[in-house]
Structures are given as C-alpha cells and as structure tokens.
Length: 120
Image (cartoon, rainbow, N blue to C red; front, side):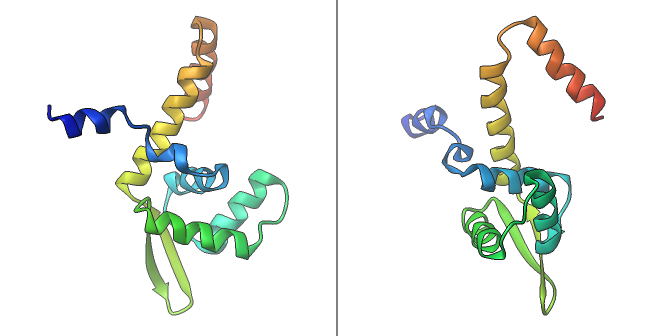
C-alpha cells in the first residue's frame, strides 16, 4: 500500500462533511431514483413540515457537484435524481459510524437486528 492510499484510508468519509438534510436526501434516494418534487414530499413527511424549494434544489445541486447524486432530464421541466456509487458509499459510511457509536453491547445489537428484520 502506498503512503497516499494509507492517508486516504485514515481520512473520514465524505458523509461526515454533509449536512443532516443532505444525508437525508441520500437516504431517500437509496430506495430509488426520484424527481425533485417526490424527494420534497418524502422530506416533508419525515420532517413533518414544508420543505422550501430554495432549500431542496441547491442541496441537490451540491450533491450532484460532489458526485453523490446523478441528475438526468425526464422531460424539459423535470429532472430525475439517482444515487451514485459514491453516494451509496456515503450512506453506508454514515450508517457505519452511527452504528459504531450506538451498538455498545449485545442488547443494542439485537435492537438493530430487529429493525433490519422488520424492514426486509
């Protein structure tokens, strides 16, 4: 392994540079590609409040620029957003970090196992 590879292995994942809002967008796109208004609806359901277009679309553009989301045109007025491989890795990195802090004993591991089983 080269020194550059060793340094990269020690650097935190890109998910740690994202806002919670951006991470939530990635999680939503983990399920399937969506157009902007569908993402907006999912976020509004999660937050229980309206999500402003002026907040959503700049964040989507940032995620596209970071290579975490791919933007394609469905028609002249509608864009579709899909998670890239790098975006999938960011979601997994965030989950791994969260679980590494939360799962401190077998009881907590079992709790997580039950949640996973319920969602399969």
